[in-house]
Image (cartoon, rainbow, N blue to C red; front, side, top):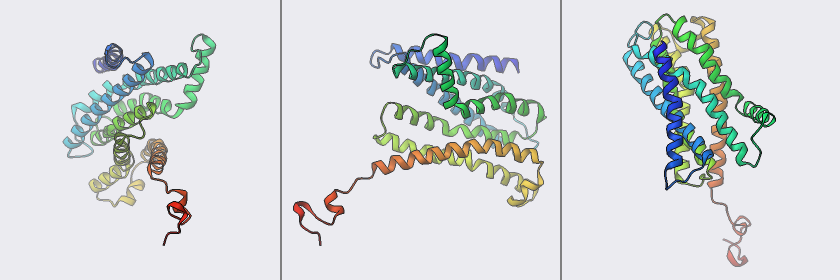
Length: 278
């Protein structure tokens, strides 16, 4: 366990520092510290998501018996990923810090640090709680409490990260005012589909998979498993539903703005020159 944790503690901060320093030194980009920090944080999140979803697919497809089958990658990647969530809390704070400075605020001194920290926790409260839950609750459960069972379901949970690269790219495009580009619309559609499939439909699918294994119809599965399992699934699903609602609202606003507006004359039933339309 110690080796995987140590590797994760080196890899993710190391990738962030490498990306940040590289972006600042590329002559054709000329990005400042704030740009390099924000892009690097999104890049590391995307890399972790690709690694997690790949590991999840390997585990998911290898476990034919959904309860008893085991795969070595389950424990190894779970331990490797724990430092990422700790690192990402700090990386998100750094992004918020630089946005605060870009807006013209002075970001120095204890008072300013407290102000930025309060604003960060207020804005990213749900994400910080999600990361802390992954470290303090999900990690001990997956390593100690499972006793080697249910690798199939943990593989499914890792595949939820498939939507993260699209989420990260969308945030970067919005930050740099690129909402009008086709790339943003295509990315938004992919983000919507992958988020819905991998983070919302994932939970009914896992219930269905267990029901298929146990010979139960889907609607009877929640009553056939311990209440703690249902509670855990509900607590994990709730923030996903909230974030999916935000994504849907953003997509609705984007495509509503993209719709061409009718000229006033046409809305009033008149063509150019004030002539009535037939």
